[in-house]
Image (cartoon, rainbow, N blue to C red):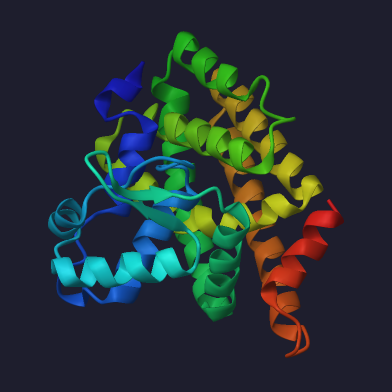
Length: 268
C-alpha cells in the first residue's frame, strides 16, 4: 500500500503534533500540541507520552517549558504522572476533559480564522483526492474501505480515530509526500475541532457517508465526484462548527462549557 511512503497513521500524527515550535515556544503552545496529539488519537488512554527531555527536543523548547505544560495538563485531568521505572506522563481516560479544552479553543478562534482553516483543509484534501483517483490501486482502496466497514456503531472517540485513519490513508494514496505531509499537518490542527461535532450523531454519520462517497468516487476514478465529496464534507463541518461556536458564546455567563457539552451529548 502507498502508506509505505510514510509512517503509519499514528506515527504521522505524532510527528505533526510534535513538529518544532521554535521561537514561539510558550507553555500554552506546548499544551496545545499535546492536546492535539491526544484529540487526534496519536496517543490513546493509558498510553505514555514522550519524556520531558524527548518532548523538549521534539518541540524545540526548554525542558522547563515542557514541565510547566505537563503540569497544567495534569491539573486539567488530561494526563497523570506515575513514578518508578515504568513511570512518566500517561493519557488519562478523560474524553470529556479533552472536549472541554477543544470547545474553549473553538470559542477563542475568530470566525474568519475558522473559515480559513476549513478552506486550507479543503484545498489540501481535495488535491490529495484528485491524485488518489489517478494513482491508487483497487487493492489499496479496498484496504481503506475496510477501515470503515464496522465503524458506524463505535463510540465517539473510537469512531473519530477510525475516520482519521481512513482520511490519512486516502491522503497517502495521492503518492505525493509533500501533499500528504501537509494534509497530516493541517488535519492535526483541525481534527480537535472536528471532533466536537461528534457530539451530534447526525453530523457524525454525515461525515461517515461523505468519506464513503469519496472512497467510491476514487474507486471509480471520478476526480470531480471525489473533489465534490471532500468539498461538501468539509464545508458542512465548518458550518456546524460556526453554529456550535455561536451557541457556546451565547450561553449565559453562569453556564459552564461542561454543561453545554453534556446537553449536546444527551441529545445525541
